[in-house]
Image (cartoon, rainbow, N blue to C red):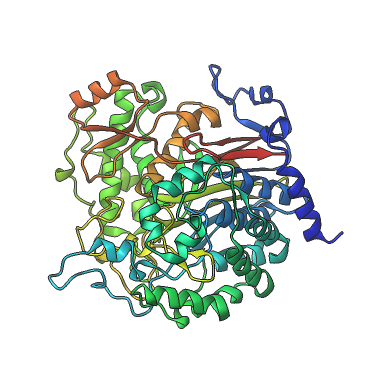
Length: 582
């Protein structure tokens, strides 16, 4: 049988097995008991021997596992999952957005970063989102043709597969095409999210026609959603590679849609898009190596910077989510996010002081003013002085294969469903990633992040990101593969997974389920999940911290690699996610 038909046949079979042992991995849960996990574990991770995928949508997870079962490696599976999510998780999975992929190659013992972030159209400039009075107009960067950056996902997936995969685009795209053509059952998560964004989606007739019924009513749980136009667009990529997206029929339709919505994208913008392979940023925390995304992501730098500031403190003995621990974490977070506002941007356009920001000596200087007893107001915290320097919807998935290769991939449309605009005739939702630029120095973006001139809009520049696909190494080999969506909270969410395992000796499921906090310098408040203890909040307030309790943060998809096998955990904060192995 042709390999593609074999994969489709296996996928069809697997998707009928929605309960029982297969849905939770091939081995019993008691395998999770190990000396590397806390003895008091009440939440156990999924265990598998050969390979594992953890993603935010269960059908896409199973696509990846079937690719691994058919002999594909972690990159093959990651690309298959990426395209499947474009069908089954339209609010974040995409081919009209962009992102970052961290790849560890076991044979070469090498980790590399693939940057397929969106870029600004060539004619964009720093004043593109300002009105005649010089004020930033948020609608222009969020729900308008000007909001759309040149997508990078398709070329990024093709690049990863061509250079580090073993299968063809036809093979890994086949499940996504089948799901778009034949349809899939609407989950509670999808139904609820579409209801929540109905106003924004419905302003675009091309989008409304896909995601709502002909009479304008919502899809109900269990009903089948088919996307024939998206299937056609995916088929063009399967046949012609990235040229089937960046040139020809699809490209013409994307440019027409963007310009009809008031944008400035051209066919040449699409044709000239390029993926960039970069060197990951690396740091060390308590004997573990932390490898993450470099700029134009700020995630890797600031995870390492925060860990460096915290390393001198006995975090483990201070206790998980104790008032003292959260206080120290918040003070370190404030300082890192203030640095983000000044120093971070596209390294192809500005000189980002990476080595200085991730150095232990710089962290020591930044942490010098931290008090264990009192919070320092954000108004008193400025970006650090660096000698010689010239001046909320994403999805993550993790994959590990039987050879020890690993992929951490985070990609996005920016807001839920991006701009909400589907390019007519393509089925492709377009991003509103241009909002990640600084529309004006000092004006917050949609996630409340403050930026400066380093992240100003410029033609063919990549907007700054918080996406943080991360691999933690133990004795030079992958130990934790993780990442999360969450806008500005991605960095701190990923940070807490790392600290929960290393400092607090949690298993990967406990680390995932644990309550989370976040501080991003401005606004000056700790954002805490509802599950955080009220007594802890009162102790934090006594230290001068302002605590705001809110909804759940992030949706981590993590895999831990041990001598006993693979342990996975998919975040329960968002319905429909799944970690699965074989």
